[in-house]
Length: 239
Ligand code: AMP
Image (cartoon, rainbow, N blue to C red; front, side, top):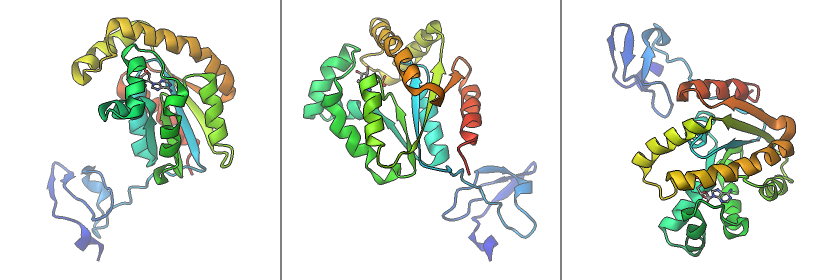
């Protein structure tokens, strides 16, 4: 019987705490009403994409791309690929790629694509990308956008670009907060300036390149506000 698969739970003020069905994701804190009198837990239906989709997150440094990309990846059960994270991992491990990339990253400059192309191609070929994936921080040039299309030629997955627009003074504030937590060598006001300039230089090129695939999101709001706008646009991609 289903109820036997539910771990012990208790009820306070009409909320059921700790009800967890084995092997299935249910909210930890859910209204008591979601547990019916038969003891069955309502299915927590996982959103499913209609077709393989590549979401490209476009935004200035500290615009919140990473935070939002991670949230969406979790929600959709698809991979989150941040080229910044991939490169930082290489730097941490002091690999050949890492040693080469570090010079550019420390200066807040873009790493030449051919330095890390093989790593990205290998990452995209992994099994968790088969239903779709999120590219965070890639492409950052027209050459890289062409590369995405080439890699996508065979499967022809849908591409949607989520562009986060954030005012520059907000970017500086957010970068200051992030610098305190993450201790990144490129999160200094000087380097942020270079990184924002690099982004601005390519932003319109990429917007032109992707045309009506771009969805503009106001990234000045708080995390939940931005997340709800993204959820709205992703809704049309779901079964
Ligand atoms: P991010 O974490 O996306 O801000 O990236 C941190 C740094 O990694 C950037 O400032 C670049 O030096 C490098 N990087 C990340 N993605 C790319 C990319 N698509 N092309 C070139 N360099 C990149």
